[in-house]
Image (cartoon, rainbow, N blue to C red; front, side):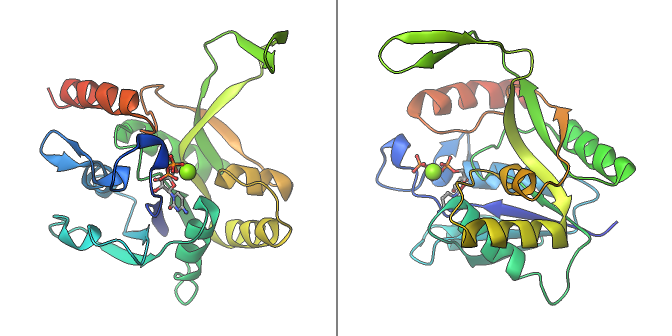
Length: 225
Ligand code: CTP
Ligand code: MG
């Protein structure tokens, strides 16, 4: 199958509160972004990885990417703009499928990625890794107004895998309309395209705050045992 991976890595990581983007924080002896790219390159069906990086980013060029098939493109203002830039860079030689994975999720399980890919290819429709919400969810502002039934609630993870052309068009039109797009699936839902929910491990966390980083260091050590 013809499948390219896109990694949005152009964020500043404001919630981490460092003076450099969080994707360059280390977990053990490698940066978060190096871990993420190394995971993706271990997936047999991924032939090519496009990474969206900010033009002001002076860290990316110093990463140790060995012989990974990685191409750098410019990031954009929001995550969706970064993904769209990466998709556009593939226009001249479009893949059939595109798998989008956050730079900030280095703990993703390779078997989960394989599972997502085979689910989507077999069904001929896109999908995302997701896990069922475990907590009791409250709606409200300063006081809880009610408890949201969680039997139909899922937490969206990445990777998210979609047919390339459909994702490109859906993302372009969503951004033109100024819709709030925080993942690829939201653009696909808006375009009435199917989004399969494929159960993934809940330890595929997005490293956002210092607490997440501490947890990620522990989880990565367990994974590497
Ligand atoms: N991202 C991107 N381009 C942007 C914003 C985010 O490529 N303009 C990427 C981030 O680098 C990250 C992923 O999208 O890998 C998920 O975003 P998030 O966790 O929100 O990262 P940041 O935007 O960097 O963090 P923060 O929101 O705390 O500033
Ligand atoms: Mg952000």
